Length: 284
Image 1 (cartoon, rainbow, N blue to C red):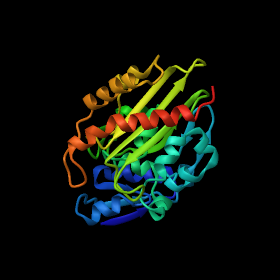
Image 2: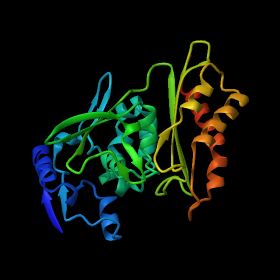
Image 3: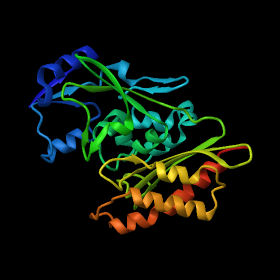
Image 4: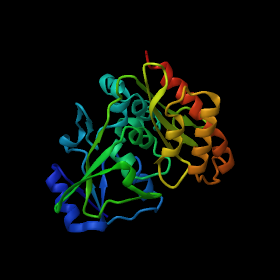
């Protein structure tokens, strides 16, 4: 295996254009190196991009823009970013231990396309879009369209992720990320859920976004559950209906960490806890 260090985006795109599927992007390496050592991937060339400073920036405007090299630690500790995206900050704090957070990147978490990617649900409820670049040009698409299947995305072999843009939390809204696991951190999610709820002046729900991970081949939003909350005051019957919609959208598997039936049973309770956190975060 060869190792090539790219100091600029142009250099990285040149290598990907030359080698295509025989190359693999390497940043923090918290996923790629482990997969390589386990024989799950076997790229001929690793293209190291960690030194491309332009890909590690954060911009907070009407839409937040994150470079793919922003680390989990930066997401978890940046005060302004945490105010604009509390669920994303909360999810970043659950990704591995502090060593993993210090080098692991949001771009890697997305591009790895794990069904249990912690940052994916908060990004989905923030209407995240990704920008993919190659020597052929750039394209921007919704994160909902980025994931195809477990560890599969729509990226072509000569493309790389160069930016993620998303909606900051608006006034009158709260959001939360809850992760079910045997431990609070350093644990792959048994179920992950992000919820963003907006409230009208009278306390009723006027907008809702809900996304899940670890219950299907890809992280996903659940519009049917969102619709069940709109116009309500989050009473038990409404949460029951939304919980049923979550279960209908989920297709978890049995594995060594939890059974599919257990994962299904947790969804309604997680939703209620997240909805309470959203409501408590808002002053009407």
